[in-house]
Length: 150
Length: 93
Image (cartoon, rainbow over all chains, first blue to last red; front, side, top):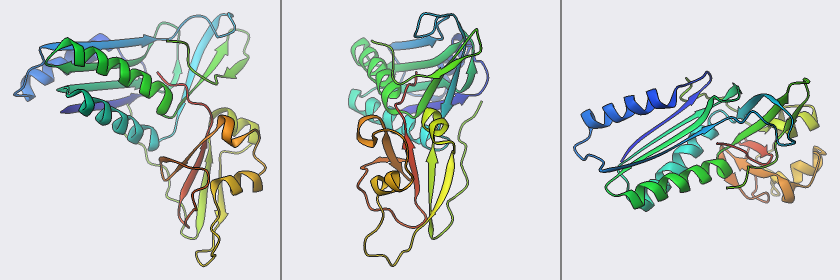
């Protein structure tokens, strides 16, 4: 199973990263994916309380976040028997519209690819140590205490 | 892009305690070293340290514990040199 995980402290273009990852897969792997599923999450322009959002700040636990992402990805990918997995996540200050997360899964069939992608996304949202703080246009801010509904 | 960032290792004979995000702001500190005697029969647990440090809120309701960067039970005995973190509610992705 091919696994790649990166944290980005500056903006990344998910489709550019995805294309590069697909190219690498074709050159490296003997087993080609017949099905790929991916998810791109972007920052909303509206805060949880409905006010305009200036930016989202993402804190993480250096060392543990990377290890936990790897544990979650390996567990999920092994259970679904997929071929490859890419996880890209932002840290630091992220602006509305910017990508915050990219999860991509390569598999032999669409079922495992889609299920693994969704499960891994939910797992990292709830079990990888990241914390979001919303910065509003008036300069106020608030740490979020949970995730948005599915 | 950041692949892996390692924090400083805890000092031998001490427990390194870390707080994050809103919990860090509420407590007013991000990191402390707590002396730990390896000869003590009754080793400290995260729950005991939470109370000794008078950290805000209910440990069982809203906070998860990690020891040496793995989730752990709040009643796990700590060892000298451990890195203990109290993690407020996670919101990734």
